[in-house]
Image 1 (cartoon, rainbow, N blue to C red):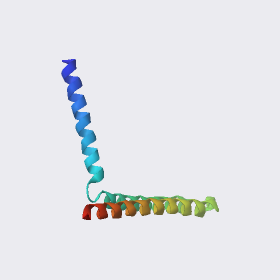
Image 2: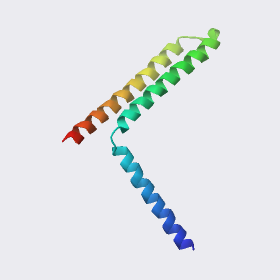
Image 3: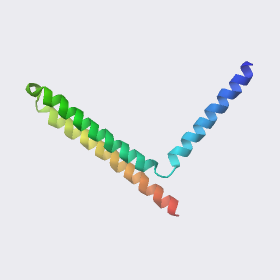
Image 4: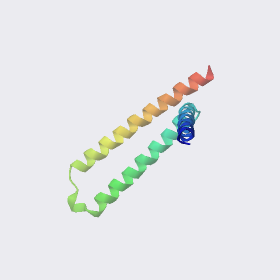
Amino acid sequence: MAVRFWYLTSFCLLTLKANLKVEETAPGVATGMILSLRERQNISRLSLRFKNGVHLFRMSTSYPQNLRSSEESFREQLEKAKKKEAAFIVTFAK
């Protein structure tokens, strides 16, 4: 019985890995990543604005620096996702 369970779990893990690889190369993955990054960027902007809006007395020069650095990192991730999508489209077109 333990042997059957081992075969079953190893089979499930292999199919899970295969499905993950298929999803990584499927069309539109980069587009989904771009949309996800944009959504995360909007959420972080709103949460930062809310946190600093409630505590106006705590606002300092670190807030704009943190906001700029987080926006820059999101932009970098967005650019990487766009490049991946463009490379996939070019590869797919060939």
